[in-house]
Amino acid sequence: MSGERERFDEIGKKIKREGGVSCHQQMGRRHILSPPGTLNTITPCAACKLLRRRCAQECPFSPYFSPHEPQKFASVHIVFGASNVSKMLMEVPESQRADAANSLVYEANVRLRDPVYGCMGAISALQHQVQSLQAEVHAVRAELLKYKYREANFIPSSLVALLLLET
Image (cartoon, rainbow, N blue to C red; front, side):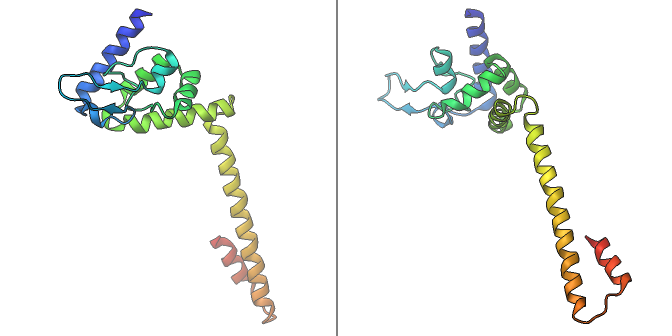
């Protein structure tokens, strides 16, 4: 357990060194500024709350998992595990880590809803919906063409074929 704690502290220090972001600008923490010489009071991030540990200044999760939305880290932790999440975040350039964390949250939520297909199930359903809507648009255009030329009592087959090929 202490080995895992040391590894998280190392990862947090690395994020802090790479990021160059001041402690007061971090997304997931709330700092209450006190007079100089006193300690800041820090609200632990969602990850530290869930893992029941003290949230250090260099916590690797605090910039990405706000204490006000603990369900985000809970779902990520269930699907990927805290150690794997920290490793994945470390592999991503610092400028893209917030987007990566949001992607992990989305993937975890979808994976919890659909354990077999995950995001691919949602993508497949949307592709099927697009195909059916395209077919419906095609049918409506053909109907419009039929009514348009019905008034003139003239439907040239070459024009119908040409318009059907456009869609």
